[in-house]
Image (cartoon, rainbow, N blue to C red; front, side):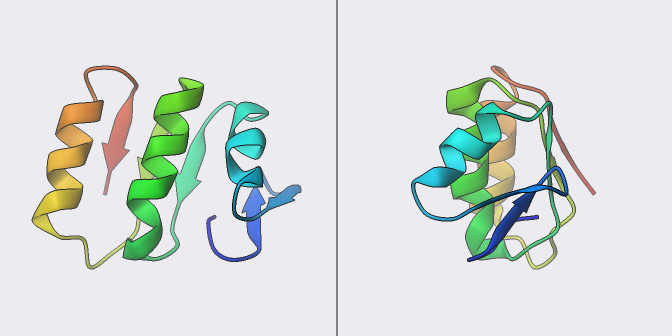
Length: 79
């Protein structure tokens, strides 16, 4: 879950620059937050080579384009 008080894996809390560090410590990111958080979360997953699952709603075409582009490098799934 990503937001200003990010909870990763149900335990680690992070925000801002700490998010990359938090992502590095988990096996997968499951994001049900807000459309504004999707691209930063996806970028953190890409940098840390972690799978990304997105269940966030109200996504735009640029989100789906980013999913397709980055799925060449990491597992990406959305629902």
